[in-house]
Image 1: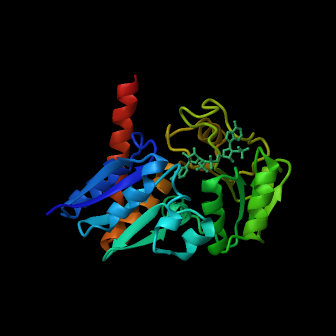
Image 2 (image 1 turned 120 degrees about the horizontal axis):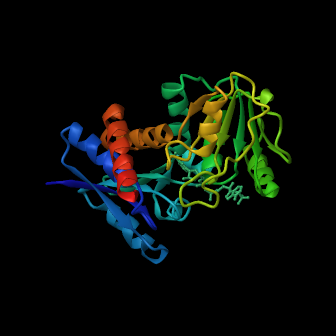
Length: 280
Ligand code: NAP
């Protein structure tokens, strides 16, 4: 009998998770079907209750339900409770456990793909939404020395930094980049279909030669920020690795098996290329 897992959100048609999770299950010889569960808010309690069925491994959760699922679960793990957001649900014998693998996925991407250990390093995060919160938490857990947060709406950055405590700090103005080891775009600027697809979220003139520029936006793979950073000879990391590693951690929670990360990357890249071809 097939088992099931899926992504709960609204909408979910754009999600890459079905492509790379299905490839991972197939590669591991598991009879698991990964489905798109488009769920308006009114249907969320019923959708989550259905995850308790014995043939369901769990789910991923995406926008706009990462916070709203929490009261519907039996237990919410430390990272998810502190982030106030769940992106992965695991069904264990009818009990539902909530996790958040977004921030840990970001740190895994830094370590595995950029070969950067965040401990002792200085980070500047642009943005103060859900992604910035998860990333800041994971960087603090990884013992980053400095986690500065700048946001278009300064009060949101101040609230986030106050919630997190030191070493997180909110900045009212964009600082000189020479102070940092790593700049991370956690805004929607540069995202296809977002508010400013052709813009970069910050100028890079003040960057030192060793700055790592990370953009967590993954559509397109090469954002205006990454293009400008590469033109300046800076190190770069795109958003796809974070997406894959948060998915790899979810895969491991559902199955107890190591995730076939290379297979997941290849499937995601194929799907993105297919979509870019179809859009042309
Ligand atoms: P969110 O909670 O809606 O936060 C959006 C952030 O973008 C806020 O800080 C917002 O600032 C800022 N922003 C929006 N429009 C702006 C503009 N015109 N100028 C300046 N700032 C602007 O979204 P999120 O869930 O954190 O996601 C943020 C981005 O990360 C999205 O592009 C998402 O696709 C990407 N993401 C990637 C991954 C991955 O695995 N790679 C995972 C999660 C998210 P205000 O507070 O001023 O509105």
